[in-house]
Image 1 (cartoon, one colour):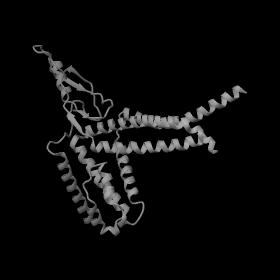
Image 2: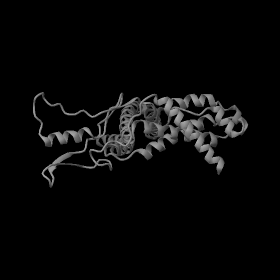
Image 3: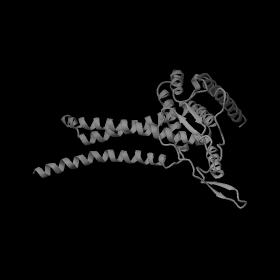
Image 4: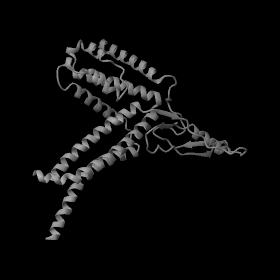
Length: 307
């Protein structure tokens, strides 16, 4: 009888653990993709669209268009990305507050955010943007998962009391655990998008190896050091932890003329040693980005009118 009771206890423990195992498989699968260097551009675009659509849907869920609090919506959107359009422009394009629709509002917000993200990528460089997406996603994912584990432990400690209310503790644990997991996924998407837009990023030049004063450097080593210095700049972002992508391997060999030939492994589809195609711009990036977005929005509107 005691063995049967202990067996039931172990079986219930496994049922609770199965809930966490399913959640763990989802998170670890996403984390593995980040660590393996999978291009996260499409995932970030999906995150951005889902987050902004949720903001618009929440603001337009009730009431008539003229009763929607668009100012509160714009205030919330500014915490996610640098908004360059105004509510008056959207209302004017709709033909008045009474003719404003959630679809038009959503389309304008998504278009504005896409232009802002494109400007952000031009500002810090395409390669650096891919690296930033990887490090931000990994950092937010790890932090939110740790917080979720604490919440699930807290839920498990008190879930047995649900039996006093004639409820199955396991069913309640599965239901509330799923709600917590869904809330964590939404928080990961929102924080990832907000960090990618608003995080202060510096593109630091790679450091050349120090050479003691008076020491002669062989020609082969000097050429290899020059190739390393010409590699992609290092990305510096405060508050973002995570392993940086390893630099490509460079090696030298004698050429047919007796000189030194440098060779390198390609990294990310770009030949090793090549310089990035885009670098951080100087001047006021906020003002330049805003003006650039305005020009693109005007060009897009003119294209719609011609159609």
